[in-house]
Length: 413
Image (tube, rainbow, N blue to C red; front, side):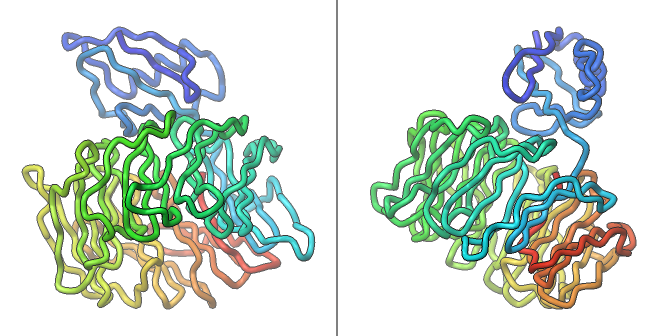
């Protein structure tokens, strides 16, 4: 029997599933809509074993759980020094939080929860507020270490992780809607340095915490119990990404390499070296390819062959890329977004490395850049009081979102 769950864990459907009668993604979607009978379920994702289930995906056996994650109408979230604003795709303003009082600490970069129903606004003094996206209502707030709030994270199931106040190196986990304290992931045995990065596993059950002095470990999110300390202690930096399956972590290390780590054992499974130190590394959502961006502004594409990533193409015309400028794959893994120091964003074909288009129009440096969930648009925010939405196929500007203050970041739901 296959159980289909909503994001908060309430059972919404019980569907038979066996090796003799496998079900595909579109069949499950049809069944969930029919059994729920609610209009909001017309837009949702199915998450199976920590990864999105496409319409072509097949579940063929076992007593398995699939999460039905509601996707509200897509929105854009931007943050300036004094306001947090939500727009729809047409550029119409929906909500605005602020302006904050003169002299109060400014907003930092905000972001949506996994299902887009909540967003978190962070301040430089460590205060974090959670709001409901549809209403703009503040639900709860937390306190974290000052100037460490931007490393906070949402889990798939609505948990929030952020660094604890003080110098303990611990991370706190709360429930996003209620503010209830869930657990404390304490510092490493050999390190009390503050946390540099907190990343939830795709299924939301584990938390990867990286300290500022390069230690990394996995914790159980609900209890704070440490599961494993990752190898290469003292060498990790803040660039890390879970594979959608949750079994592997991709990261760059301080020795200029990129490495894959087994999440169960913490051990290195593959080391990726290049002609220059690795500045950034990003994995395609399909897990079939990854990109290394090097400090000499070149890149190297890798594709998976027989369980290992093999270098397939060198990219020599990336332009003026400086880490940590944004770099990302589209949701289907077919294109790559690369933000440049020239205030432009370059879109590349992920298979060939050839340029598809450039998104131009900025006069000051880029503070964030991202594909829309369907990969058709690119959102770019600039330090000089503007964010823009571009067509990802030809690079023309579709919508301009002007601000009265510098734009610190922007994201799609």
